[in-house]
Image 1 (tube, protein in one colour):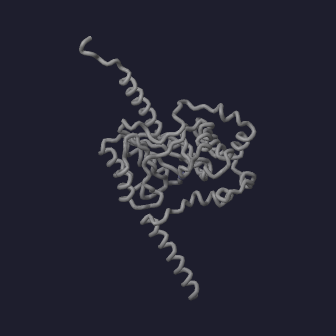
Image 2 (cartoon, helix red, strand yellow; image 1 turned 60 degrees about the vertical axis):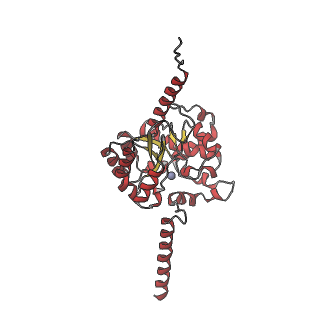
Image 3 (cartoon, rainbow, N blue to C red; image 1 turned 180 degrees about the vertical axis):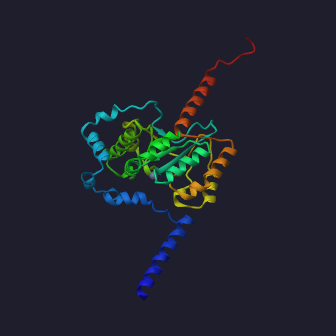
Length: 303
Ligand SMILES: [Zn+2]
């Protein structure tokens, strides 16, 4: 009994120390979603080239995508999207007083429903970078998000570090999520975001091969680590900038609570809050206008 009390005391102590250390940013919080997936494929960080996880995988969308990527590589190049944007998007036009609102890692049940309702009541639209495996479990949430005017984007199928897996699997991750979202929504997404932002030239090319533009961000308050509502607010407002892209996460309680105040403060500073698609369209228009103004012939008094 005494030994049990000591063990329990140690566990409570370690958990407490971890919480405090993450809160004061002494250590990076663990991304449990990523860890759960990595457990199944722990070759990812050990440089092992034989990929047993590929053979073991049961996910039908992942398997279909892998077969297509492996057997018919030309199929990738033929994928097209309705509008084309630059292959890698780090921000919008800096002349534009707009911020794109993005939510990663969903859909979470049932909090995604509450988030959609909250966005509706705030008259906001956002871009949701969803994980294929999660979307497969709750396709109704994906439909609900889109029906409310939000934009659905690809955050890979399994939420793995794409810069640590073979190129074929990177293409498969994006393609499987595309196939699933096409099945759910009737069309494939235009944008993707690599989990954790982990990317290299292979990751960008795999996105491009699958008809996707890679979207990164300018503003990351690390809300997933539950730093507190005040901290999320302070960090976000500190890094606001024209054409910025704000990275938040679905299923985070503090983010939900602070969202009305956060978006009010952003709007009070004169920014319009939009989806990534809207930001890119407005950025392109602003750029064309600027180019047109530059090329206008200068008027001379002497003429
Ligand atoms: Zn993520």
